[in-house]
Image (cartoon, rainbow, N blue to C red; front, side, top):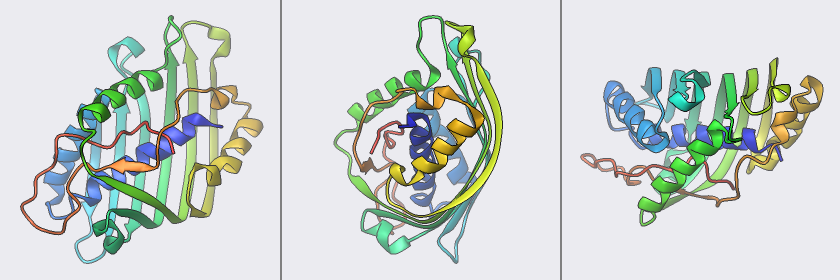
Length: 241
């Protein structure tokens, strides 16, 4: 249930893994590489205000991340994330395991758009992600182990349908909640259900995505050695657990 937020959860993991695997690069270089790879993966315009990777501690932060919509969906803002801040387990990462100690995820805005043919921007990105995943199916994988403490803040949620305007919805949620021991998206379902019921956002229950796997293909080799270059393929951002 709540497939939409499950997709956002996976998108956050994509951003986290991409940046962690670029820890040996300077922040401006990492920012440029991450922006380019997300653009290749999604086919959408990407902007990152600031990216910082901790050198003394295994931390990273992304400020003002924005993913735009394709022209067929109006070229407006798709996802606006003012802040993602992560403390990760470096030893686990080197063993191809993703274990995050703390995650602060601030979703400023999400705008889902449905065109006249009934296709949504989420579905369009999913199709693009599947193509990228197929092209890089031979790359290594990393297994997501969980998040010790995930603090979620949700701002504005919008659904706009060119096919059926009566389905249009918009609400400012303004909720903040910390969920501990997150091992899968099921741990977030009570929070998402609360949003759907209290804010009466019916589109959150739409079956927008299909099932996938727990394995996360690597954007880069999982190694602590310097001089390693990014592979040409990213994580399949839209795969489900």
